[in-house]
Image (tube, rainbow, N blue to C red; front, side, top):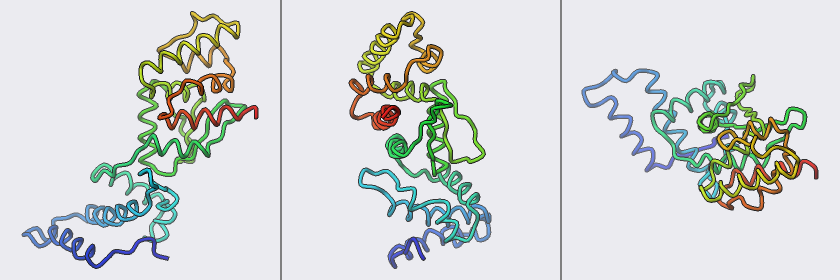
Amino acid sequence: MKYIEFTMKEKVELFDKIATQFYEANFGQLSKADMELMMFQIYYEKLVKQSRFEDGTIDYCKCSDYKISHELGITQQRVRNLKVRNQLRNPIEYKWQAALARLTDNARYDRRSGKVIINIPDPNLFLEIQNFIEEQGAFVEKQLNSKILQIRAEYYIALIISMEPEKSRKEIVKLLKKQFKISGKDEEAFDEKNIGKSLIDLAVDISTIASEMAKVLSPQNLVGNALLNLLRSING
């Protein structure tokens, strides 16, 4: 089964693109690796274009490593490597926060470890999320399965708070301090600069925090609302 088909107009345009790499006194100068990357770019951009949802996010099921591997006859690991190289050379625009929100809808919360576990099917999306998490002072635990993202729920909460406008962030912090006080914990021990660690150290009930935050979180915070829906369902 073919996942993409090029129109005759597209084929003409793409031949011209390839020809410029050979027929302008530069025959043989393009390396095999660069030639393969160019061919992958042509294929992948077409595939992504026809795999977008109405909101602009990518349906990764339609351009999965497996499907591309099967059609191109290469390993899934090689597909992932080509995706990463292509994004560095020829960036494809995508909304990583909206994509993460979609994936969070299917995430799982591990009660024993207190971690949110999400399958991130695309390597570039994973790297984007990992970079954001690390910029906020948290970290991603490396897994044997490179598609699995695991992060403590408390750090995830801190991340979604960082996505909020300043006014909303202040309201949430105020709410969290109130919950500390209600729980009989020392409000002064709450560190606004390290919210995730504060929530862990003081063993605040995650489902209760999620229920309270849902009252003030911005509707535009897609990732945050998806996470809070997950955490509120813990005791459901």
